[in-house]
Length: 229
Image (cartoon, rainbow, N blue to C red; front, side, top):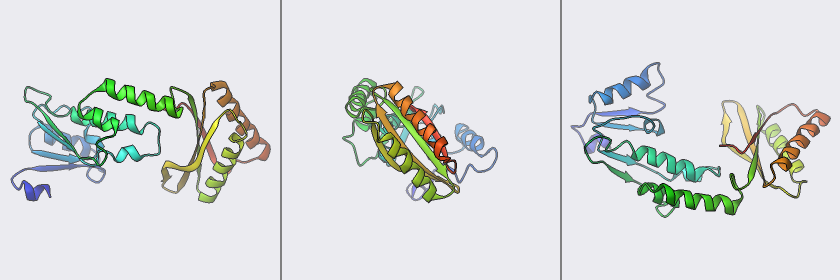
C-alpha cells in the first residue's frame, strides 16, 4: 500500500522476517541512516534507541494492541512504547509530527502518550495499581509452569492455584495461559497471587515447594517470580 501511495519513495521493511540473517538488523538501520531510503516500516524493534535526525513523521498503527495483553503492566508498556516511538520524530532542528491510530483513544495510557504527559500517566497508573492491588501498591507472586504436555502443564497450574487458594489473606488469579502460551513445543501456564504482606507470599511459595517435594511432582518446570517488572 505504501508503494502504491508513494511510488517514488524508497521503502525499507524491518521485522522478524527481514532480520533473520546475521547483520540484517545493522544493514537496514545503516541504509536508513545513510538516507538511502525514505520510509522505514517495522515492528517495535525500530522504536528504541535510534537517532535519525531527518525523520519528521512517525506513524503508529494499532497502538492499543499491547493494552490487551494479560499483564497488569500493559498500560505502562503501551505508554513507554508510544513515547519511544514518538521520540523518533523531530530529533533535530526540524519539527516532528506523530500520528497514532487506535481504537481506544480514551485510554489514559494512549491519551497521555499523545501529549507526552508523564505526570498524567503516572497519576492514572498509580491509581489503577492501588485500586487493583498490583505492585507497588501490593506484592505479587507469579508462578510460571512449563511442560511439553499441555495437559500436564494445566494440571500442575491448577494444583498450584489450589494450594494458594487455601491462604485466605491472598488473592489467587488463574490458572490461565501465559502471555506467551507456547514456545516451540513447550506449553506455558501462569498463576498470580496478590497480597499486601510479602512474607505471607513467601510462605505460600514455600508451601507449594514443600507440597511438590512430598507429592514428587517434578514432571513440570515451575518458576517463581516476586513483584515481576
